[in-house]
Image (cartoon, rainbow, N blue to C red; front, side):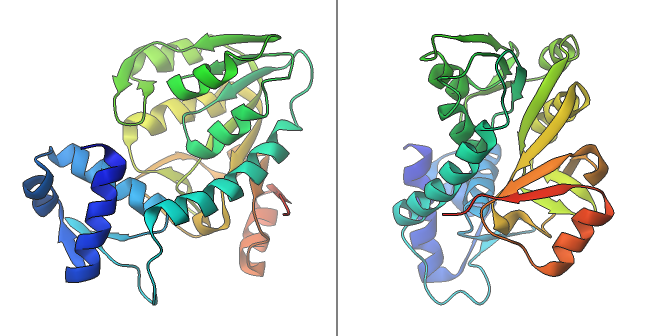
Length: 253
């Protein structure tokens, strides 16, 4: 069973029973605990569930659960706007770092006609960028994360440290006073090094990511120069970003 099929089945289970544990996912779909957790992380990223200690529940104050396919389509449109706006910041000859997030993947789709050097640890991004005749692509080698098709580990972190980039595009799960956070430490260690090696850092995040916090903090707000989002966040969030000198750009419809 593919990941998307499992996630649809998990949503069906939640509609009936309202909560599910990691152990129950393992039993139902014959997968490992790590795979079950990754499914829940992905569902939470898409706003479909709220993760709890040991499992997940349906989001509070949620009267209707859209189908996963419909929600994915909506999210994709938001990410397309963010990605298109982000691509405008790449100038001819730039050295660009792309992480492995899906929002950054949307940016990669708009870089195909650019003339630049692109460094990424994402197999998806490298495949998309390979259609660009004027792009010089460097795929970072390391251990493969099979579900999301990105490379991580000490070899990737060490290699990133060899590059000096003009700009980095970074995806997140949460943005708060705690900084920028991600679910998995291995992914976060790569993102942290990407931030350190770039002169200008742009975080790509839809509005749902604000005031959320995840397991691993890979950057502080002051490490980020700009955030591109899909709609203007609440005033307290704008104030938080201004206090840390982070610019905010909204990719309008």
